[in-house]
Image 1 (tube, helix red, strand yellow):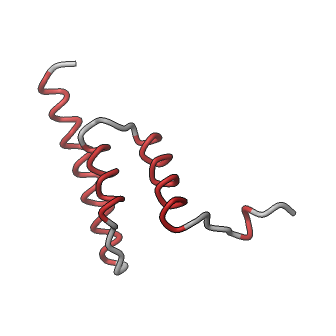
Image 2: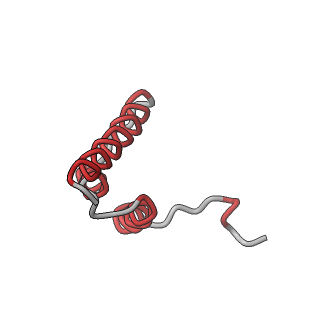
Length: 75
């Protein structure tokens, strides 16, 4: 991958994160420092989108405990 392609990919990931953060802020949400660290790893290309989702779920479980939703419970 060329330097230009890597830079463009990073710019695209950064724009995606900015959009997601802006959407959350409109709803009155602000990410924690731990979540921001995971977002930065994604933007820097250390994590894929799938790896970022896994890392965020693991972080949320550690910090806040598992979230139980009715649809996730056995019937």
